[in-house]
Length: 185
Length: 67
Image (cartoon, rainbow over all chains, first blue to last red; front, side, top):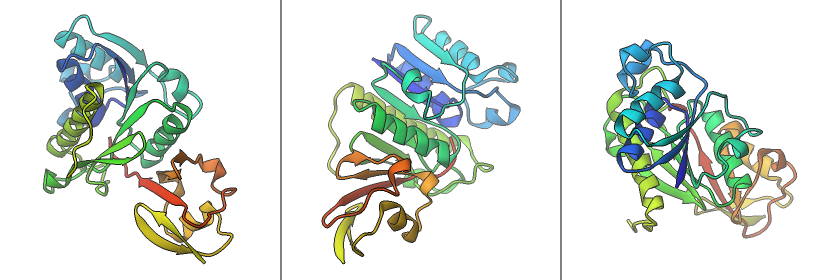
């Protein structure tokens, strides 16, 4: 099953790594950015990747886990125009973008134009407050949202809470892949 | 006046209220949300043209930055 990863920062790079470790064999990796030194506190990259396109750096790391993983690298900025084409054939799209506005565009476009596709979104990951506030919520229809829903200080992001949220997203994606129904809480 | 459900809560709305007007008056930042009305996602360009009706069910997801 092909899974799309929209954004290869703290959430997306970690989600992609967890999915490949879990046996996912086909991913579409989308990011227009290059690796910067400031990314290394929470993203999966290493010092040698600084300056490299995130799509290529992420691909290199994922292939060290599974050399046979099929990766489609898209070094572009996502918009409502290109989202349906880029994620065509994906059954699930992991939303791991930076800005609230681009998250909304991705969710709205996938949910309205790609009716059978699930969105698993990251929302609220900054700071160092307790990670116990980070939860997975089935909002409606085909969208799940992971995060605390409120923290948004993008200058104050650290590996622990970001990785907890990425774990929630990867876990929900695996649940969808395996057809596991929502738990009643 | 009539009642709509918003994320599971009942809210009173004036007759003739457009979705866009409702969202703004409820302090939603339109650029940062996705809205489902009675099971259908409503694209932002349509917010102005959708007039709310009695018993409509809205689900609104609000996004914050950080990825």
